[in-house]
Structure formats: structure tokens, C-alpha cells
Amino acid sequence: MTDRLELWELTACGAHQRGHFRLSSGLHSGDYLQCALYLAHPRQAARAGSLLAAGLLEAGHEPDVVVAPALGGLIIGYATAAALDRPFLFTERSDGRMALRRGFGFAPGQRVVIVEDVVTTGRSTREVVEVVEAAGARVIAMAALVNRSVRTNPFDPLPFVPLLEVDFPTWDPADCPLCRAGETIVKPGSRPA
Image 1: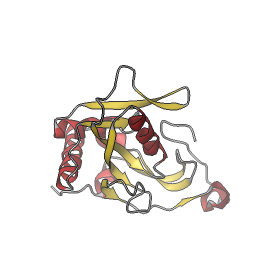
Image 2: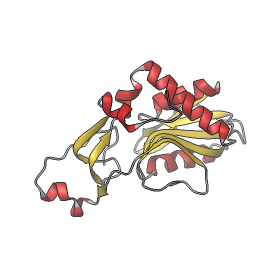
Image 3: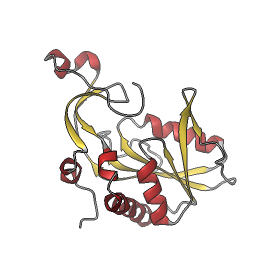
């Protein structure tokens, strides 16, 4: 067992897919990561959560609460919270806005780690930061199963702990070679582009 996630592990269970995809960011790519297929296996989800928790603690980021955006971050967020033995809260989209799930809240100044499945542009995660900070908590770090942003830390100056970094090309729709080749595009994921 490694102390990081390997791309072959995602490929082996069908979580790394090849084709022509419109990502939630609006960008196009020939690679898509459906991490839910990897995290659907409880032992794999628990291992990934334990690895993220260990990486956070090793980097000196000990949260009071773990927060994740629905839907993508739910399983890995919960698994990370379980490994840290910390409460788990999540956000969801309501009327097009990101908001804390009904009934969730923070004590003033609570230290929060935000956990995602895949970071491409970081837009969803930054929306969660705004929600957490508006509710009076303090975001101390970000974590993700996979960083595909092509930046070491897309959340700088906040610390970022990913388990896997991949460099899959993405294109603006107008520059997409797969579109020019006439390949059919698929829009996977839980958020409209």
C-alpha cells in the first residue's frame, strides 16, 4: 500500500475515463475523473480518507470540523472526517447558490478543512470557503483526492493537500481539438456547466 493515490487505482475501477468531456468548469478534456466509482468501495474510501487525514496532520493542519461540497466531496469528506474523528458538514446548491446544509453551523472561529474529490479550477471549493467564512468559521486548509488544476496550489495562500496530481490537458470550447475532430461530447458530473 502506498501513502498516496496512484492514477492506475482510479483507472482500474473505471474512475479515470477517456473520451470527450465538458467539465463542470466549462472546459473540455479528453480525460474525466469520476471519483465516486473509486469511492464506492468502502475500503478504498476509508484508505483515501485516512491518507488525506494523515497528510493534513503531517502538514500541521488540525481542524475542528471537515466540510465538503455536495455531491462530489461527500464521500471523501466524510471519510477524511472519520479518520480525523471530527464532525462532518457539507454544503449544497440551493437556488443556484452554495449554502450550508440546513441545520448545520459553526462555533465562532472553528478551524475548518474543506475536502473535495477533484479540483480543476477550484471554483466550487472557493464558493465553500465563502460560505464557511460567512458563517463565522476559519478555513485553515484545503484537501482533495485529485488535483487536476495544473497548479501546485490553486488556493494559495491557503494550504492545499492533494492525494494525486494529474496533468490532463483542458481546452476552452473554441480551442478544443476533440470538437474540431467531430468527437461527441459528454457532460458528466453533478453540476451544470
